[in-house]
Amino acid sequence: MFNHDERFAYDKMFGKKKGSADEKNGTASKKISILFVDETNDLQSQIAEYFLNEFYHNVYDIRSAGPKYDCVDCELVAVMYQNGYDIRRATSKDFNANNMIPYDYVIFLQKATYDRIHEIIPHKGKQILKDFGSRADLKATDDASLAACYIELVERVRTWIKETFSSPDDLEKLVI
Image (cartoon, rainbow, N blue to C red):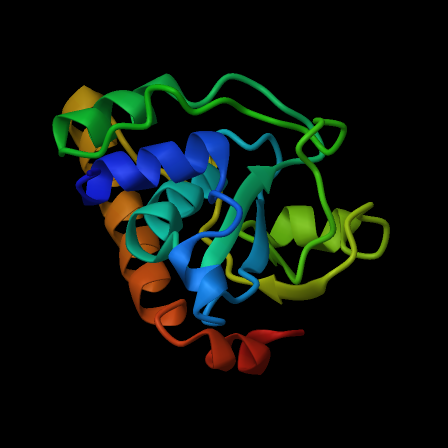
């Protein structure tokens, strides 16, 4: 028998087994599909995808991408790992990635990206904007203050995810 973490890893890798107890009991429900977007899918969207998977993977089908892709921010990976959040396997994806599907909600995490592409984004879905800024907004003078900026960003995103997604019905109120 799987423990919670093993079940989550198995389901994430292979999907839910057809004919599961939930399906047989008639309690299986469609997950709400979410796409988090930032410019290069390297910072805010990675944090949001991680925490939504951690907190509510049984409610949401979660992806992240950007109009462009780059490496996931290395400092972010290190700071999150040092604080107990492991995103070392995260990869940056653009809108051409094979895992793109129709989404219930497309959530922009940078206003500049929203302003530039919200009318032409290839993935239709109700749009939400929650601006967490960009890496350029991090005001740091040395490595220690940069790490503190990352920790503050991670905690802001974590708190927003935990509060905002706890009630799926409330997402409709955030649609712009």
